[in-house]
Length: 227
View 1 (cartoon, helix red, strand yellow):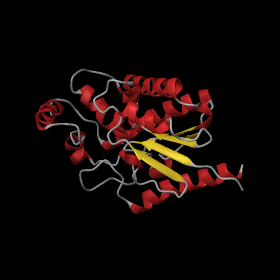
View 2 (spheres, one colour; view 1 turned 120 degrees about the vertical axis):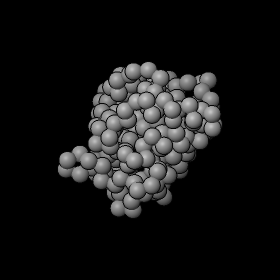
View 3 (cartoon, rainbow, N blue to C red; view 1 turned 60 degrees about the horizontal axis):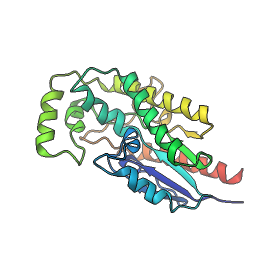
View 4 (tube, rainbow, N blue to C red; view 1 turned 45 degrees about the vertical axis):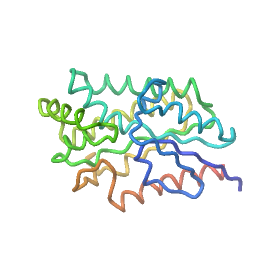
């Protein structure tokens, strides 16, 4: 049985993913759309490519980005101007794939979906202001702006994430890129988030949910290594 080495790039939401064949590169608070911006404050495009260009061309590259876009960037933009979520998601994914097409070898790329939201309604506004690059002044101004707009309830935010994943999967199908759905197992039969957090964090805390995520990853790698 042959086996492959996997390299997983993503924002901090990859923290719960663990597999012996996966090397993780966490780009905390990196957005999917920001990867296409060589002048972004984070400098993540350069950091990503510096790592990527040293990886064996035979290894598999897993990408998990978009959670920051849909759960942070959208609301930051919405606080300044009216923009529909669908319009935002299309723009985000187009920029994400522009980066991929211009810089990466498609034959080794695997795209992971984003998760459903886990942040409870009572914490959502505060949660949007928790990105590490936000200084006190920026955060205070953002809180004032967020207080002037309606942040959707979690069931509506679940719909947003499902839209993002639908668009993501369609783009993967168009380019014949494998897509791993990590969203469906974290929703109930009514498409409600199963694992809403009691405290103010966007990251999944529930052990059962984390195990479900890792089971899917393990199954994908097992199937891929035996084909």
